[in-house]
Amino acid sequence: MAYFRKRQGKKGTRWQAVIRMGGRRPQVATFRTKGEAEEWSRGIETAISKGSYLPTYEAKRRTVKDLLERYKETEIPKKKDQVNPTRHANFWIDRLGDLKLFELSRAAIVEVRDELAKERAPATVNRYLALLSHACTMAEREWEW
Image (tube, rainbow, N blue to C red; front, side):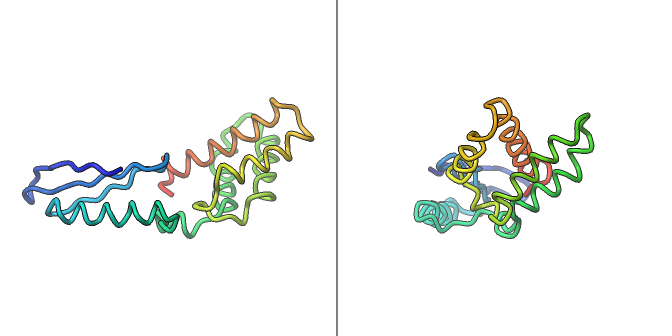
């Protein structure tokens, strides 16, 4: 659902549209008129509900493999134990590496998690999930993917 903020700035009055839907990252854009903001938000909401909205260029271009390779290069060297996190990252690359980031879904992760749970202890499964979660958080917050 969208909401609108009236903003006063150097360029005069602007309208900011903010869309929050389905647990996705908020989509934000600024316009000169409220009508333009409403029109944009209707288009985005329609595309999201149809499942045809691709939020960012980076999400369209990058794969899970790209994400985890960067994570292995930048984050794992900071860890005391590098063997297990590298193994965990390679596991996710083998199972989900070809997926684009915007295609990475809860269902895909749960399917792989259930496969892993047949072979590993629950605490180990949690460690695998924690690495994937941290990599996704880094991509969103630090690397702005």
